[in-house]
Length: 391
Ligand SMILES: *Cc1c(COP(=O)(O)O)cnc(C)c1O
Image (cartoon, rainbow, N blue to C red; front, side, top):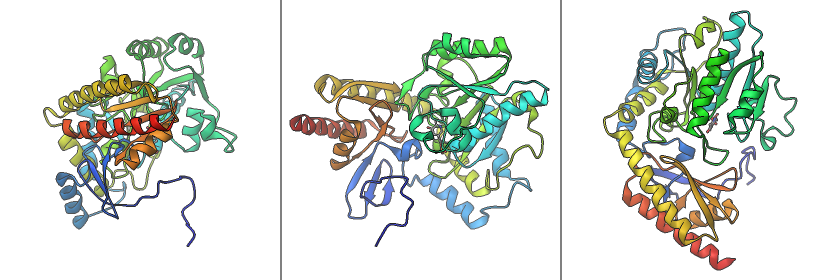
């Protein structure tokens, strides 16, 4: 039987049947420690009882009704995000790329509504903002853009963490700077705090918008609710997705009232965005993530994991030469091909995710405990040992 799935992925030959906390269980019964979390999505692990009951209760009442009518869950979600961030207003959508599309449209509309000619957006080498045409054009990664040209006009790019280059690239047509506080797909590369602070200052000097792509870094992943908080600054616009639905496909774009001032009724929309079923999931995620002590736990587990990763680097320098990241968004810089280490870990029962710059990413559920980290490190060390015996 041939596979009718369009071959845009090359999946590992495993089918997962169910999940329990930080574990995934395959059809044949094999258990995997899930340190990929569906690429930073299942932040509360699998089958979290609070999420299951919130979603099943809502599923029995109402799934969808459209934004032609008020949706209480969406109003509550927006209010909670506004109250816990720099933002005043929230647009709900279905994915990270859509959240970034909304950010791009907000920036263009903001200046268009003022009669300004500013429309260009500055991004950074190694960026990943999604797979739609605008977000591909923003990311400018050859491996993603190849064959899909012409790209959308209006995006400029300079080196990541290079504030002087950013300053030099801003013209009287620049509308916004769009940056990931930690580049995820690009290889778990944290922005320097001084770089983020400098970008904020630069945007203020020019009266342009600072936009954060926190699709991967957001919702507690780095030990703060949002990663830009580490730098003590706030953006004007922020895209989030991944963790905010805990596994339900959701995205959101958060903005200050000023930045969103061009977004009048009819300016933007999404059929599914913020529907009752999705909002049951997001509000249930927020119930847990906003609980006292939750982010402390993430920060502590992040420190612990990073310390244990450094131990692995010291023990197996022929396999991994460094560890980097922020909170529970971390990666090994590999000496061997990253996919070899990911495959060896997979064989030994640990799920990890490759990233750019030959990095193996670890993105455990935020509810991970020390014992799970120890179990993961044991598998990684065993995998490094096996790989070093091969070379
Ligand atoms: C995953 C990701 C996206 C794209 O999200 P989708 O839900 O796949 O569209 C955008 N930006 C960043 C930083 C991401 O990590």
